[in-house]
Image (cartoon, rainbow, N blue to C red; front, side):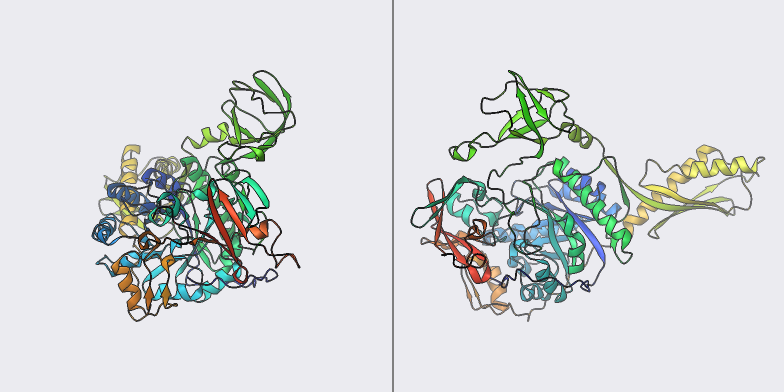
Length: 638
């Protein structure tokens, strides 16, 4: 397990940008399936990540090889990339299937694999780029430097890192640094959570997390004093790094990752468009930066991440530790605060609000004394607006626990969702057109803004036009008709000796043929990233791997042994641990959240704590020098 380092609350990161190998910025979006991936690219993603038929960290988001091929074909039109997640730990009998799957997705056109299990590096795999999954627990410069040595070209850093730590990693590697900028936050360091497996036999490292951390519980001292009751104590708000993008760029991040392979399509469209626009604003004022794919996006809506699923927003630890990373009330999408109740009727509510409401809006509220509800109760209550008449909102029936003065949240904005349900974005590539003479006709050359060319020739009987200006205007008009393609005419040059008479049908055919040639050239000239060399003599930074090293197969053991690890324990899923053991390691500290941190409150007594979730009692162990908390318990599944 790598060390994060000691928390320094007053440390400020230096301002000078870290020098990295590339200044091309990559917006990386989730693809639940090929259609979602295509929409993500249309809305501005430079790359998408998708699960294959098996072995993805979201077991319910698998896709066929054929669909991956379809996504790759679309993505490469814009020189966008497709990363396939094969990022679970693998058992020995799964390795042959994994090897075949890797070859299949490589032949399908995938640009990279996202990998957790080091056993994959011992297989016979194609020359495909490898990305180190965040499930590898990538926190230290030493760990990241090792990953580069053994063949990884991109690394997904732990979400818990701050700007100072990201800078230190970036200064010590040539790999592209990838960092999560939006979406759900796992409360544990990725890869260091066995809570789900211990209590439900569903392993997070096998893509089957049961999200036990989102359940309500009670926080108590070991003596039984209740500190919190029926609260979602391990449920974090969602990540939102909108305000930190430029600081992350200066720290060395070049790939900006949106979480959400299980989210709906409106989330993918909205959030991708939001970050596309934010990054484009930075690129516009900093000419040394550029997008890593081709084309600009034209969105038909104004993106707003608050209008699609989120649990509130936090920038987590990017700017060091602070309060406000969690909302203990609910693990659900509460929504935007939009109103307060002013009057109640039998089938309507009236509200005070500056917002406009629509039929079909979804509203939510917390009833009085919601913290006293039973753990089985859903504290967050919902309403659907059947008919909106200004600030009078008709519902099927007004709940008895809704009171005048209650705060109303909107977690389904019908008008916004209707816009996103339609075609809502298009990618545009600028192109210059040039018409020149040939011996027996004319030639049209289309050159896109990136230097790719398509050409087409037309044999004609060269008859000078009788009306020069009218013919020139007509030729320009017909050649510029690129509306149904990915291209828009930036400049049209007519360099023929004369203005030849050419019917519109011939010009349209010539243009279509040249566009097809350009599209073919763009795809033919696209180059997938190459695999990096595996240094067989690289030395892993630690000599002992506990069960949290997630070593599940003999190939992985052989890999670590080859690279200097002396002692290797089987992964938690295999070793039959029966005694209390750390089931989760997290930087989310409940002592800190309840103002009981000895570092923050001088003289405070650091009493041990327990967390009760249902009938299960978990011990909380605090490693204060590292500012980490361990959730300790026994394995119920043994």
